[in-house]
View 1: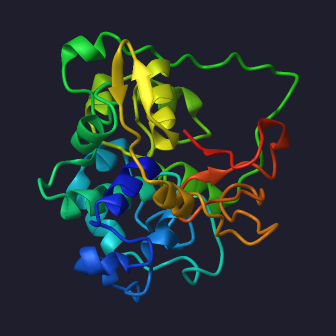
View 2: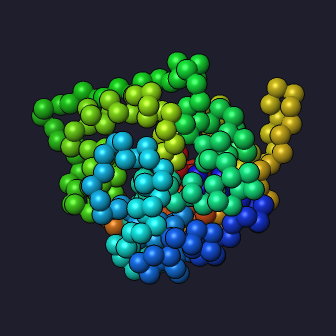
Length: 272
């Protein structure tokens, strides 16, 4: 998702420092006119969930989800804290890309056309569906309880306010194994790809790639990637939806790991 936005920034269609409402006027409702794109991407917009209780079917309805987010009141003052927007960020980013793309492609089509044709957000046909590996629920150990305690705020954010219940993991696993969910476009939660495609995308973010005799050009200029991966999270600031963990995000939505995983080296970014 961050890579798709960075491409739009590279093309001059989006600006990290611009208000979301500049591209999506309806988003300004409920005093959201000053929320910047960088606030959304770094999980500082105060919109980790919508107030309405949701079902899985609701998450498939793009117009409903984007309308709910456009009218939603922030749960904290935007820019003053961060909390993982587990599902909502996908709808906001997807709607923005659809609006600014000269071809007005859906998010899933944009990703396949511009990043990699084997990265699917919305499986296009039965042939691809037949290749999708099923998720398998882990076996529960009755002697241990490794579930982290969740307050209502965390639960609403991580379950898309009830659509994917974490207290009933078997139902969520079943939902994510259904072809109808694979066919939907849920940019933050149902990307489907293979290891080679994912590796290719990340490789193309940092340089040219030679594959099977074909040279592919780097997707981004150095300055674009530098802005996208610039840390905008204050040191030690707790994540309001991820159990207070000190997660760190860049301006462009990439998670920054170099402080926590020093063995991986400097300038490490990602989150997939």
